[in-house]
Image (cartoon, rainbow, N blue to C red; front, side, top):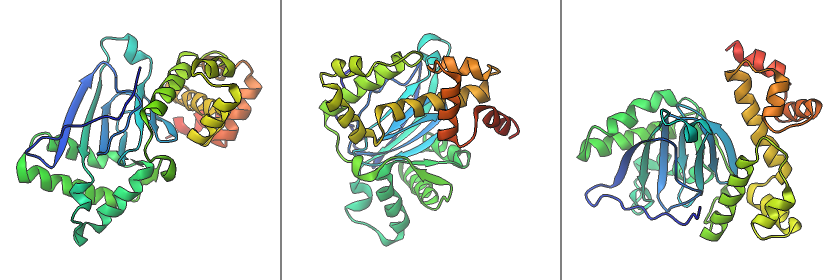
Length: 284
C-alpha cells in the first residue's frame, strides 16, 4: 500500500471543509497533508498513529493534527472481518493561511493551539465537543464559520489535553518514508500474536538489520522491541478492561510466550501489574 502526500481539494466557496465518514473501516494509509486536521471518532476502535506516537483509540477520540504531520488510523481486526461493523468519524480540515496569513490578535489562543498541534494533540474531555462536530454538518456559510471559530477557541482553552508526538520529528515525511513505515506497521500487525522477526522485517524493507534499527529509532524515538512492547501492552490493557479473559490468556493473545516477561513489561509501561490494572479500571 503506497502512501504519498495527500492533496486535499477545499470547497471553492468555503474556508474549510467538514466531512462525515461512515465505512467498514478506516482505509487511509500512513499519510500527511499541509492542512490541519481535527478528527472526532463517533464509532470505531483500533490504534491511532500520529508522528512518533502510537496509541489505542475508541469512540469519542478527538485529535488535532498539525500541518504536514503524518498520521494513520488502523481499526481493530473486527472491522476488517465483520461487514456489520462500521466506523463513523467527522473530520475538519483547513489550511494554515486561514489563521496565519493575516493573524488577528483576538485569535492568539488559537494560534498557540495550532503551533502546539505540530506534535498532535488529543483532548480528554471530548464529549463536551461532540455536538459541535454534528452541528457543523447541518449549517453553512457564516453560521458554520463562526461555529468553527468557537470550537477552536474552546479547544484552545481546554486544560484536559496532551501532546502525542515529538514536534521536530513531525515535520515533512517524504512519500518514500511513508511507504516504508506503512510496510513496517502492516508487518507488525500481521504478526502481532507471534514472535516478530527483526531480520525478516529488515529484509522486507530492503535494509540491513543495523540500518533498520537506526531508521526505526530515529523515526519513533523507541527501539523496535520497545515499540512492539508498547503496542502489545496497549492491546493487553484493552483486553483486561473489555473482556473476562485471564491474564495468562491475554499474555499469549498479545504475542508473549512468557507470563513473567509479560508481567514485567506491563508493570514497566503501566507502572502497575495487569491484575491491579484490571481491578483499578473495573472500579471506575
